[in-house]
Length: 141
Image 1 (tube, one colour):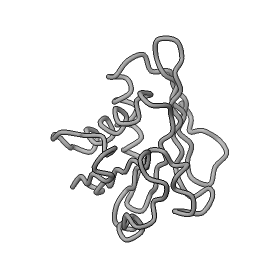
Image 2 (cartoon, helix red, strand yellow; image 1 turned 180 degrees about the vertical axis):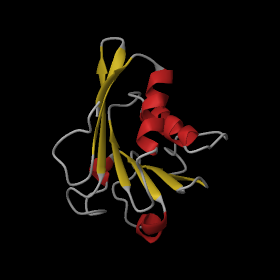
Image 3 (tube, helix red, strand yellow; image 1 turned 135 degrees about the vertical axis):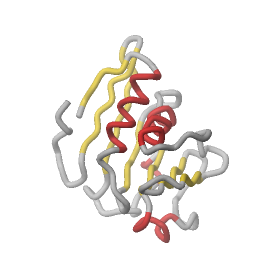
Image 4 (cartoon, rainbow, N blue to C red; image 1 turned 30 degrees about the horizontal axis):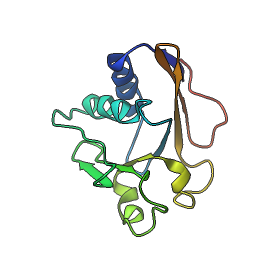
């Protein structure tokens, strides 16, 4: 699914739609420049799953856990060189794992096994593309 989003509310709405498609064991790679809206999209995804608490970027904590259904692990690998040693593989089966800066997650899952979400600046908004695992094609808009 590819969509232009004009503002934060539209980014959160996209996140909520994506969240409705996820199940425990899914891995979502979130890519985009600093400030592109990765954490904003995660905020919407969590809101769509019923989370009403604060949503903070895990840039400094490295991992945030949310007791939604399915439970969410949100990690930001910007400040690390590797995911190994964070214990992510121990919780992947029972959680949805959201990974910001997935270029540092090489080897976490086999090629094609993760959802891929790309957020790009476009004029005054963003273009977000979400692709299912094991698929070359984006989801339909």
